[in-house]
Image (tube, rainbow, N blue to C red; front, top):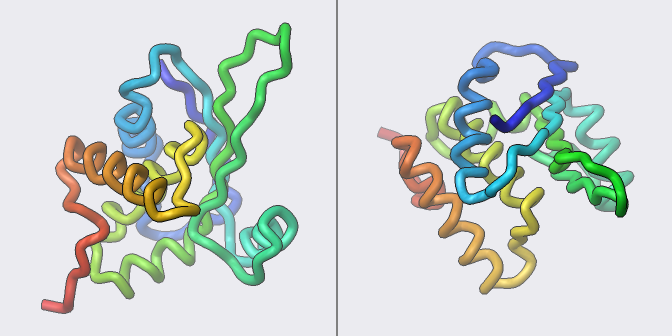
Length: 153
């Protein structure tokens, strides 16, 4: 079983519970043959902005940061990496994008796990491959394609 360590530095309404996060992680890791461990840190905008500036040299908070862990030779450890999620940004994006907050949380976590597995979206081909994988995983979780623009009802 994939292990998760959730650090809730910032608590707010609408955050998923551990079982939901575990289900999304397991779905994203379905094709990975060995069990892994992922640390998930849920933070406020100040911590997200500080980490985004420090590691990506970009100003302001972001929805998720992924920090893959490279296991040194000779060490038997299944730590895949860390995900740092900014709860206020995820909540705001869900409203702006007219998505159910819990569905947006699922998408952001799946997106982050795929980054830990080496997927990226720097160029168009990589983006298409990563987005296709996200759509496929989310469909299995009964969540609509997150890249289809939804307008207000």
